[in-house]
Image 1: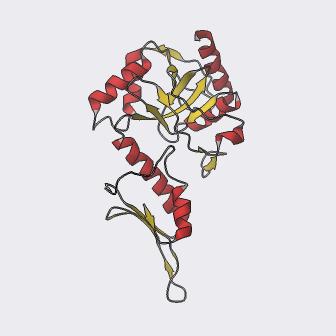
Image 2 (image 1 turned 90 degrees about the vertical axis):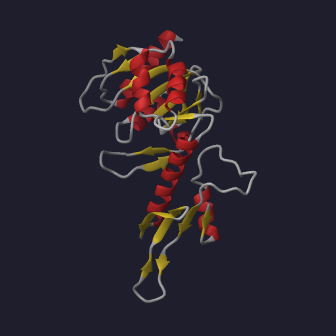
Image 3 (image 1 turned 180 degrees about the vertical axis):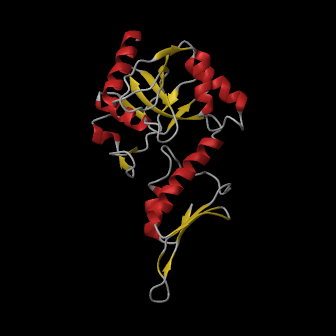
Length: 253
């Protein structure tokens, strides 16, 4: 990672994935370069802010904030694809009584608002972006700030879990419940019980390294949901759905 100014380097460092550590080798497989735009050499001319991954230009825009957001997302995806000992699944995750509630789903499916509601109800924060699974199927924390949209169509804002009164998980925990759900205005959460096989297929559809390492991904997901209840159904208001999920898990713990 490199930048063209010292001040920008500090901002970029704050966007590195949770748990990152300095490398113990000078061997570089992926080099991100962030260039800050601004006033040009001539009046009325501005320079673009840009992001490069190795020699490939990923972004070119007048907005440095946009470049930084793309860098954060691009780097997290690269880590998710290349992780050697973890399987990354697009999902929100919270902990409750030592078990994980796992909510698979892509962007704009409402998983972050449901995660936030669960945190307000007392759950422990693990992630609103990726469920990080080890070979035993346990979920590890990936606690980046939540990307919350205050209303539909509005840009997202970053909010630490502590602002919602929640603690952040520090230890891996087993999956206790899988909720396959998405927001539908006016819907009442009346989920159907699904099979473990259905859960594996749903998680596999949101697993980042599924094409590169399908056998490993399938085996990890199968261990993660073994003996775990799976609920599927559209939901309406997030706080009511959060209460229903907690009640279901409490009945099983």
